[in-house]
Length: 278
Length: 305
Image (cartoon, rainbow over all chains, first blue to last red; front, side, top):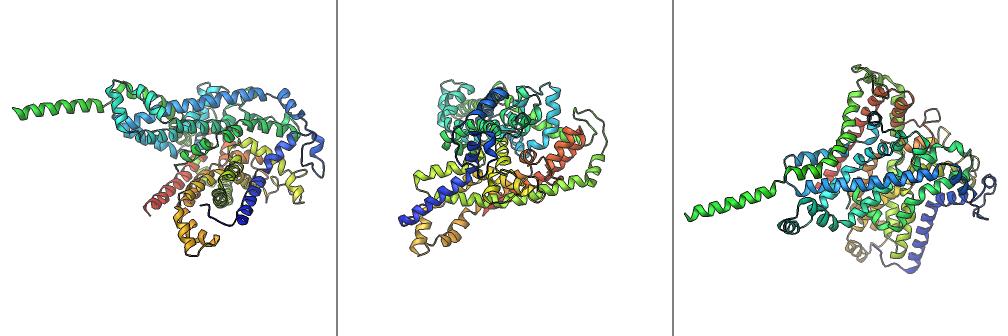
C-alpha cells in the first residue's frame, strides 16, 4: 500500500500523521502534566504547558491518603485470576468441542454460541441477586465469577477454531503412544497455540482490569474496590484537587498502557481475534 | 470363508474406530463441565431469570410476587423509559457513523506509513482504547471542565460541556469515540492490508494515481465489507452505553443523558425495584437481539456477495 511517491509528499504525510497522533493523545499528556503540578497552578491562566518544576506531591498524597495500593492489589489479583481461569476453562472446553466425539457436542457448541447474543449489561439485576444469595457481594469471587462467564464464549470459539486446524496426524500419533486426552491437550495442542493463548491472556487481563460496570455493582466497600472503580468513587477524598485526580488516573492506567506498549503486536492480534477478524 | 474373515477383520477395525471416536464420559465431563457450569450459572441462568423477574414486583433481593404483565403495561406508559430509549438512539446516531469513518481515516493513516513510523502512529492512535473507562472520564472531566479546562482555554469559549443540556450528549459521544475508535481502526487496518497491491499498481499504470480517485474506485469498494462489519458491530455495542454516561453526567442535566441501562440501574439499585428494572432490561435485550439478527443477516449477505 506504500506507493512510491516523491519524498516530499511522503514526509508531509508522515508529519501530518504524527501530528494527528499527538493531538489524539494530547488529553493523556495533559493528565500527566497536571498530575505533576500543584493545585494552584491548575487555576492559572495562561496554563503552564510543561510541568516545571516536577512535583510529585499529588502522587505521594494519593498513595498515602487513599486505598489506592489496596485497589491495585485487588485489581492485579482479580484480573490475573480471571485471565488464567478463562484460558484454562475455555481451552479445555474448546479442545473437547474440537477433538472429542460425544453425544450433545453440537448442543454444547450451540449453547456457547448463544452466549454471544446475551448482553451482560441486561442481566446485571438477577446476577446481583444471585451473587448476593451466594454471599459473595464485596468479595473477590463475586467480582471474578461472572466475568469468567462473560468472556468465556468468545475464547471457547477461538480455541475450537485453532484446534480444528491442528493436523490430525499429530493427535493420532499421540493417541497411538497411549496419551490420554488431557495430556494431549496440555502437552500438544496448547503448546502449539502459545501465540494465541498469550494474545488472549493480554486481552483478558486488560479487559478485566478495565471493567467498570460489574465490579462497580458488586462492590460497595472501599477496601474491596478495583482500581478503575475506586478512583471514580472516592473523589470526595480529593475535593476538586485536579493534580490528585490525575495522579490517581495515571496510576490506574499505567499497567494496561505499559502492557500494550511492550506487547503491541500481541494485544492488537488478540483484539482482532476476538472481534471475529483473524 | 475368506470373505467372512475379511468381514470379521473390518468389523474389528470398525469397532476399534468407533471406540476411538466416542470419548469416555469421564474425559468429556472433566474437560467440558468446568466451563459449562460457570457459563450456565452466571450467564444463561441470569438471562432466564431476568425474564421471570420482569413479571414480578421483586425488590433488589429478588423477593416479590407475580404481577402478570403489569410491569409491561407500566413500561409502555412510562414516559421516562421512552425518553431513555430516545436518548440511547440519539447517542447511537452521534457515535456510530463518526466512529466508523474516523476508524477508516486512522486505518488509512497507519497503513500508508513507512515501517518505522507505522508502529509509533498505531500506538498513539490505539492507546486510548486500553485505558479504563474511569481514567478516560476523569481525564475529560478535567480537560473539558468549564472554568479551567484546557479545551475551553484553547478555543476561548466558556462551555460547560457535560452540564449544558445541548452539549452533554454530544460531549459523551465525543469521549466515547476518542476512547473506542482505535478498535475500529484495527479492523480497518486488517481490511486495507488485504487489498492486493497489484490493484494500485494497475491503477497507477492507467494514470489513476490521484489519491482521491484510487480511494473512490479501489479502496472504498474493496474495504466496504469491513466498513459494514464495523458499522453493525458498533450498532449492537452502543445500545449498552452506561459507564461513560454514569461517570460523566450521571444522566443529567435534567435527565438529558439518561440512557436505558442507566434507567434500569436507577430502578434496581437506588429504588430497589428489581422487577421493573428486569422489565426494562428485557425490553432492551429484545431491541439488541433484533439489531443482532439484522447484523447476522447483513454479514451473511456480505459473505454471499
